[in-house]
Length: 276
Image (cartoon, rainbow, N blue to C red; front, side, top):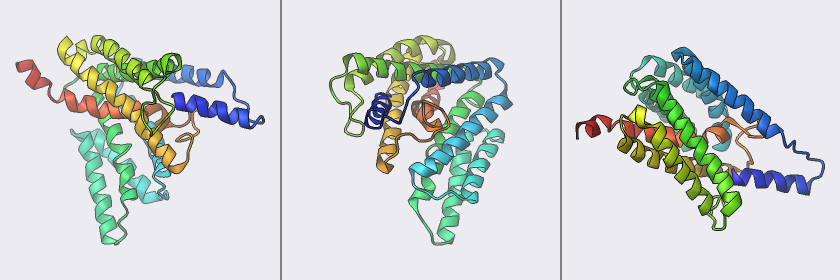
């Protein structure tokens, strides 16, 4: 977040013809929040699946650019197949693994193995499937898990941005020098506090909610960092341009995607915790 704002400022200063609307980012954010609230309020399985599916396919398209993979129909066909199969399978993430296996088999048969062609079926495919699985398959938690995850990711992101602006001094990582340790720490701390309270219902108690919120908050920070790394590797400012003032789908879902994998995995331990 810090990185994006400062880059936009630098470009505007260096090129006076580039004019950034100060309200563009807030207008887009307002629309996104309204749409998210509507989808969560309706809480319909097919609508959730379709909404996440559209976001996934747009994110998949952006990932092809980040991994410098030339788009083609069979890649998109594989992505669509993994999402459709996830709707009917009790293990949505395995649908993505199954399609990745098929893609790897085709590449091997054609003797055209390229790790880059497999990468989009790992990221963002598996995290998006985990995000869907949180709603559809994890012990009936449903919409409460999605709200819990989105709340943590939003608080971490906002806390890291404003905390970094106010107190940031120490660079967090060479991968993204504009992110600060202080900002990341404030974001994680806020995510833990808010997440621990919000997750009491979905997790069944304060202790599991606290533990899951800790790891999910940290994962959100590294999800943001990972996407920053991918963009820097290919010299891209944003993963896409579909969201004015915000960039692409992956720019908005980066922290959520890492958080979804972490939350999905840790919730699998709940039956054991509940027996202690």
